Amino acid sequence: MHLFIAGGQEYILGLAALLKSIELNASNDVHLSVKITIVLTGINTQQKEKLQNCCKYEVEWQEFQSNYDELLCINGSRIAYVKLEPEKYTNAQERLIWIDCDTLVLGSLEPIWNLDLKGKPIAAAPNAWGNPNNSKDIRPYFNTGLLVYDMKLWGQEELSKKLTNNAKINLWGDCDQGAFNSVLAGRWKQLEQIWNNPDTEDMSTKVMHFMSRPKPWESPTPNKLWVEMLSQTPFKDELQKIKNKSNWLFNFKQKYREREMWVRQPIVKFKSYVKNKQR
Image (cartoon, rainbow, N blue to C red; front, side, top):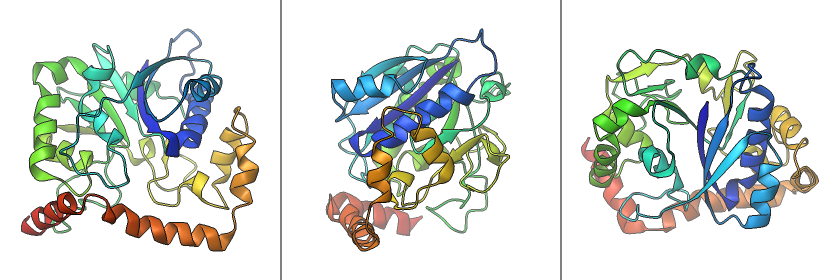
């Protein structure tokens, strides 16, 4: 089983908790090898070693190749765009599973690793809030927090090139997700919501996704399951710092974050806004 993840300094605690959840839950088969490729930005050697110690499985580190300057940036980083080009960062030939770093794996991933994609290049779960680029669009729209790639078909159809070009032309408000849904409309295998679930109360969940802000490491009252995972990692001392965050400072940072992300690259964001209005 080959897993594909990316993250930066801001998401390092998310990566730590995710890696521990993968170790505990990703496979029930003791004979199944699990390889993890992580694309990093802004994380030093010492922090890499701590992350590796979060998980018993082999981790292959890749540095983020910043060739996405023309693409829309919302949260200060374009690292999510690496999922448009899986063959650039991994050597996967048949199957690959992408997982966002603000998730927890709570059940075996073997069912989706062995899933028949029925000739489709990708499998994904529906986006819980539909199409954010067009609220009137009632067609199925998927969330890219978890993706199952057919790498053979992906290469044959040169999908990385098509997706990257689409993202540059359209400047989708939801970034990589808009490009995926534009290029692969009607050509994705639909997974049950439990494989990419924003409902943190649903105990049938296989992959829990903290889609909204605040993320667990940003909140003075983080999700209990997430805390349980992080407490089993070398980053467990960070939990007390998280819990000691004052509510007024936390609220201030949240309001600042909402405004700050639109201050960066105002021209690109304005172009994206205009394009979205025209759809």
